[in-house]
Image 1 (cartoon, rainbow, N blue to C red):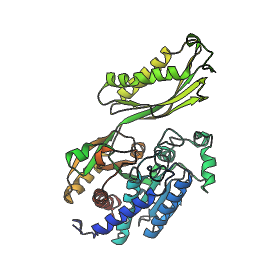
Image 2: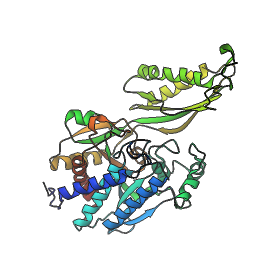
Image 3: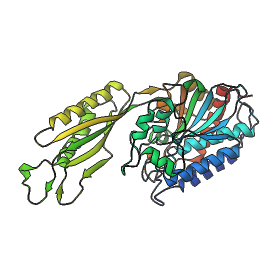
Length: 420
C-alpha cells in the first residue's frame, strides 16, 4: 500500500529503507562495538549521534536548535505565527551494552513524519517539531528522564548543575567538553506545546505474542528510584573477627535479597529491581565500609509504589545497628500517567483506516511521554520487540513495523497540526 487513505503520497519502501539506514548508522555510535549500544549522555558517541541527527533534520528542511540540556529540536514552521507546536520524537541515549532501537526508533520515526510533510508539500498550521531527548535512561547522571524533566521545569537549574556521573564529572563539564552550551534556556513554556507524540519499542512480549504490530498506549506505570547508602566500618579481612564486623556489603545484600518478597506481597504487577551497586573501598582483602545501590520500583497503581517505598524504608530501619547507618534518598518519583483520550482515539482510528490491527496496551517502562503528560496532550505507540528483549545487544524490532507506525503518526500529525 503506497498511499494512505487521505490521499497523501507515502512511498512505503522508501520510508522503510530510510528507517533501516538511520537505525543502522546510529547503532555505530557506540562505546562497545560488537557488544551492544553504549551511548551515554554528553559522551563522544552522543556527539556523533547528535551531529548525524542534526544533519538529517537539516536535509529534511527543518530549522535546528539545541537547548541548555542538549535536547535537539528540528522545526517545520507553521502558517499560524506564534502557534504552539506538535512535538514528535524520543530519546537517543542508551543503557550500557543496550540495543539500537530503544529511543532511536522514535527519533527516526519523527524524522520520517517530518520528511513526509515536506515530500507532500504540506504546510502545518501549527508547527511540527522533531525532538531528540537526552538522558532518558539515567545511565550517566542517574534518575532518568532528564531531558524532558528539565524541559518542563521538574529539574531546576541548580539541581541540574549539581548532577555528577560516577567519575565526579558534572553535567556542565560534560556538556562543555563536547561543545554544548549549558547556559542556553532549558525550561520551555507549556503554552508553546500543543501535543507530544512518541513511538517506542514495547520492550516486552505482549504484541509479539498476540501477533499485533501496533500497540496504542493507554497508560504508563508509575515509578520511583531510590538510592540506598549503607555505611559500616572498614577493616582487615583476615584479622577482624566475624562477630565484630560492620560490613556494609553484607547488610546491603541482606536487604536486596528481600526485595522480591516485598514486591510479591504487594502484587498486582508491582516490580522492584536493583541494577546498580557500588562497593567501597572495593578491595578484595578489605571489609567494605560503604555500599551504594539503586532500587527501581514500578506499578500501575500509585498506592503500590508508595507502599513499597515505605517497606524499603522500614527494612532499612531494621538493619540500623551498632556500626551500621543507612541513608535512603529518592532522586526520582513519577506518578502513573494516562495518555490523552482524544489522541488515543485518533491513533486507533488512523491505525484502523490504514488497515493495521492494533490493541490497547499499558507501558511497564517509563518514558519521556509520562513527563510531558502533565503539561500537554500526549499519545504513544508501541511496536513489537523480538522475543520481548530490550536493554541488551539482542534488542531488535522490524523496520516494517516502524514504517507502519510512521504512517499512523503521519496521519495523526496532519490532524493535530491541521496541515494544509
